Image (cartoon, rainbow, N blue to C red; front, side, top):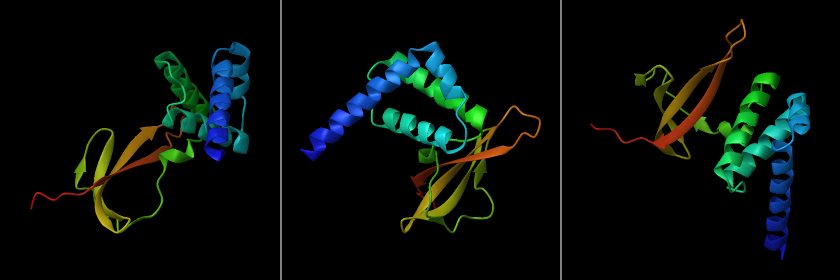
Length: 141
């Protein structure tokens, strides 16, 4: 029963998000969100995408655009894009590129490759946002 109720709630939430995505005035209202309200909306929208609750590709694209625009407007990102519990990150990157650097670190007791993605705001300060991806580390040596 609890799972059924949760599934129904998720479906209703997805329908509400679809209505927002399809409404110019609702999208404009979302862009005005600030602080915790903006963070909560970003988190709900990202969670909806992660769970595959938006079935059409067009809706997924609209949701991602909304996350991008709201993130730029409020200078926040969905909480799911950050990871905690990473320890022992090497001081220097093993590899680097135009979009990020790869470090060795530990996560959940295992050595992992930590991808540190660099992205920049368009504002004058060019503040750095740090997004992280974690992969098992397999040394070729």
